[in-house]
Image (cartoon, rainbow, N blue to C red; front, side, top):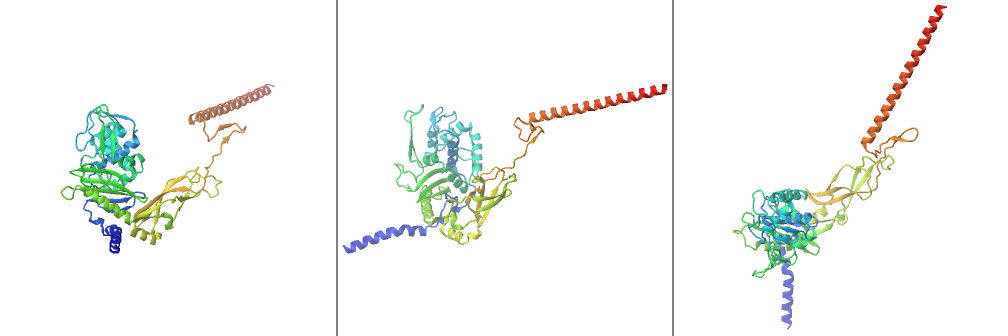
Length: 457
């Protein structure tokens, strides 16, 4: 019995230490996928990257962008009528012309079964055409900082001018995962669409992301218990692609894997790799509060139109809002940052400061850099109230305002009043001059008459 118990305890001990040993031995540099990024979702810091800024074809991971635009620009409950030109290439939801579904149903059809037809129907509904929707996609991408991408199709069907980068896809996913509806959609395993006007049975949609869902005909399970999304993609030109997210102990990571080509790796390599990469990230990634680094948090500014009575003559301290801000990264990186915190630089971005300003108003941003890499960004807020300079009004001697700086009636009325007053003044001057000339003439004639009378005498 003692021997049995000792053996059992040894097995338990080995089971406890094997995962840590396996993680310690795992090296993400051995990943065969061509384009890779592992990002901390909270801060946007990249924990691992491989060819992160090289152009890659995104295939159906494009639908992450289509989805977030649909959520922001549309109403999930609005009814969409499928157009006359239904996409019939690649993976499909299998909708038909003039079929009526809610936008919600189409989004699930696009994100779970990767319906190219659903993506096109959404694009045409929101923008009128795929080309017009592509303009929306590129504008949105630019607005959230995707600098290496260009989109042509809402579904990611191949086009040489439709490309992205692994870093851009991580940036996009980090943005999209802040939307609660998006999170609910991409984490769903199965979704049922009710009967439509064209299909009396409706649709049963199963998620293609094997980290989220194991289909009945799958021989092996790749479900990852910490997975929270996001989207698969496959084309001959793009290879097998995966954008995935996972959360453990309050830390959420985003993994982007693009370019797994069929002749190089197995069909499930992207799911196996994502799970290992997440485990490695959770084991090696740590976060610290920005307050631990003693970062400078004051930027001086000047308010251009501050009141003459302002006690600081318009000078204003802008305070970096570092509350709840964290810096995350690999343990070795964070330790190096802590030891060299004095080398962290700050770069403020502040426009012209114009009163009135209230204490706590957001007036700019500031970013902190370490060795050329941005660690975090924060808002700059005003430290105090600043009132604006008041312009004194000009009044008539009687106290009745004639022309003031506070033009309540509009520029046109003030201009008319000015010209009326000027004209009246001119008429008065002319009249006075006329009276003076007339009186002068009378006096001269009187003098002349007196002279002639005197001569006659």
